[in-house]
Image (cartoon, rainbow, N blue to C red):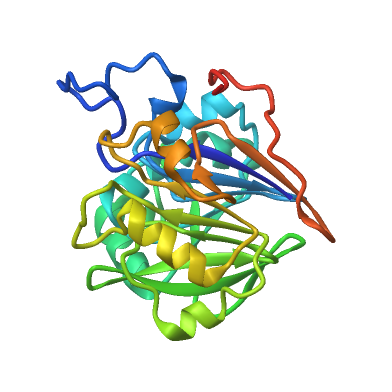
Length: 270
């Protein structure tokens, strides 16, 4: 399995429009962050969240086929790229399965009602909504849903083997923590240094990651208050910020075999 970080930024992306702060002006490519999303590849190619930057992300990562999309929740920065899956459905000639919990599917139907009609026009993507309420299979991978809280909103975290992805979270219920044991790699929301009502701060993420105890933890969804190099120097061993274009590879026995970098248009971070 291979996991590509297509975007690691918060809802406004980095640099922020009109901002002149040090991170937004930084020459370090690790401080350029598209909206958070990952690509999971095994025998199928699976997107987690179709961000506002979906088209740019797919072009940059040179993704030619897409077999499914998993949505963590319905907030704009995680769903507004859905309309742009159209070229993939045209080429495949098949409807694209989209996986989400009941609340997210309801909101997707409201936002993209033209995609959910019984007889969509020829100019829109064909999608097939699939409700997530228990473990589900895509190709040779089994996905375990992990409920986490983003304020009062239940967000769909996912676990695949010994890898887990938890975006947009400020509280993990005890029952979900129990399902996150024995991880090789955890990806976790860490917005900024100051506390936030619906996201983990960097310090809170460090504390929660310590409780979960994954061998490696990557933080995502960072805002422009977070400088990549300086923050990494302050994090404990086994934890670092993810960055756009980072690729992790996993084998079937020992977990993380990366990081790796595949050929993309994203500049590598140093």
